Length: 164
Ligand code: HEC
Image: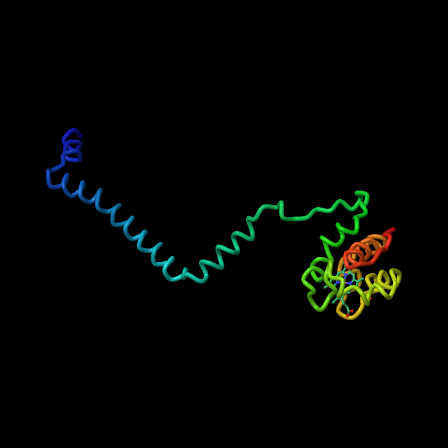
């Protein structure tokens, strides 16, 4: 029994060398091969274009939720002033004169329109006229808010309308 035991545990210097070299080299080869595999997969799947698209997609997915507008439907609606409505909605066209919209503060643009009278202008603002969309596209604006915005704009172009 003890003889057998000795045989089992007795190692030659050669065995030590083989075991040591094998024990060190084998994991290194394995690691090297794994790295090669990973790099190979990356190289075949990723090019600059998809990388950019992916970066954008990720940015879109992880963007802060602060971007989302949460509107409390039960909150009392606060009526906006003419200037507030203008800055929120009408300015998109009426500041630059886009689509030939009469420009804010431009007397020449507003002169003829003012001649139609306040009520007609308000009606056109509510119902829309030609390239002017109904309510200027601000579907949630009340008639009074629109009337105020019309007065605000027309007055900037020389009218003397009194807003409701
Ligand atoms: C998408 C662009 C756009 C937006 C936004 C917009 N308008 Fe206009 N608006 C126009 C255009 C274009 C005209 C000229 C229409 C025409 O006479 O052919 C116009 C004309 C008008 C007129 C004159 C109508 C008339 O009878 O002469 C009023 C008043 C007016 N807009 C009010 C508003 C108000 C108030 C808002 C914001 C709530 C608003 N608009 C937002 C494009 C816009």
